[in-house]
Every structure is written in structure tokens, then in C-alpha cells.
View 1 (cartoon, rainbow, N blue to C red):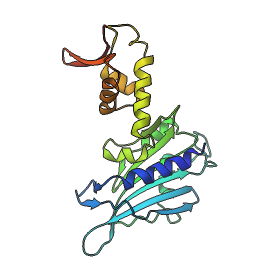
View 2: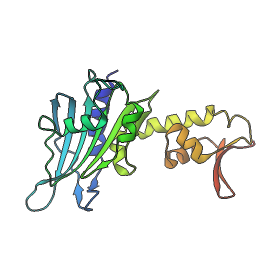
View 3: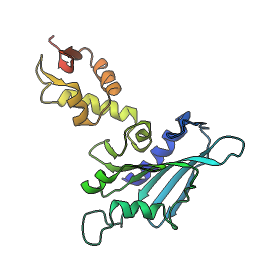
View 4: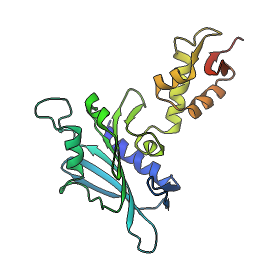
Length: 228
């Protein structure tokens, strides 16, 4: 399956469904028209889908959301001839890279079909007027997104709510600490293990027909398999 195409297509879909965006540094708001035209093009480092948003009388582009499918031929593992994460980001924003105006804020997600080495994941951070995210495919419907916390991560996670819900349900039924009645596992541990959020977990528990419940004990939240 072409995961790069899936990444770009889901990014396009999620942005169009966003409704409203808020520029992180200034709080300026942008309405998202579902029929907005994205810019799709290629650069030496890969395929690009970019949404420029503008507001005010001058209608200048003041916020960019950009997704990149990194070219598969690029070296991604540590080694003598492998560019650092910093070099890669400089190439993407360099003279032959993306046109990112200085008066805009930028949010950029990069998917590599080869995955990302640990040293690169650790280097992803907020850099001036840009938020960087690195994305890789995991097993099943799961993807991993490395970068700053906040609402922007969701645009670069191709997994849709229905897929997350199915994965949460499967995880509840297969978790080794939730097999017998009375078994329990800490909620935060479960969420971290399966890269899920609390809202999806709550829905999965509610849809279990009473088989599971979320309980509080000494200030800690647990998922418990109920006695029947």
C-alpha cells in the first residue's frame, strides 16, 4: 500500500474538516473553507501538499500547513553520509525547498516510509516561526507523530477516529492485564502503550456492553474488567 499517498490524502481531508484554525504565536483565527485549494507539488526531497491561509485586508498568507512525503531514496539511518535532522530541515526550507514567507507561521509534517532514527526524533522541536513534526507508519492502522504537543499533531496523524476506536476496542480485549474479572491496568499506562487519547478510550469502554469500566482509586484512574 502507498502509505505516502495515504498520509497526504488524510492530511488534506483533516485540514478541510478543521472549520477554524488559530495561528499559534498570535492567536489570529482563520476560517477553513472545505473547498479551499491546496498546493500540490514536488521538490527534490519529496512530494508536498500545502495549505496557505490568509486574513485581513491585504490577504497575505500568514499561516501555512504543509505535509511532505519524503522521497524514499533519501538516507534515513545514522552514518557517515547521512545528513542530520537539522540539515534535512534546512534543505526543505532552503533556496530549492519550500517558499515560506518570513511574515508567516509554518506547521510542517514530514512522513518517511523508512521510519525515523531516534536521534532525529529527539531533534524535532519548535524552531522560531515553525512547528516540525516527523511521522512514521506503525503496525495496523497506527501511526506515530513526533514533535511538539498541541492541536497541530492531529493533522499529521492519518489514523481516523473509526480506526482508533477499533484499535482501542481490540486493545481492551487483548490486554494481558484485562483478561480476568477484576483485572485492572492504569489508564495512563494503557493510553501510552497504545498511543490513544482519553476520549477514544472512554468511547471504547462505553461501547463494551459493560465488560469494562473506568474507576478511580487513590487519585489514580484505572481500566477494570468488570465482575459479571
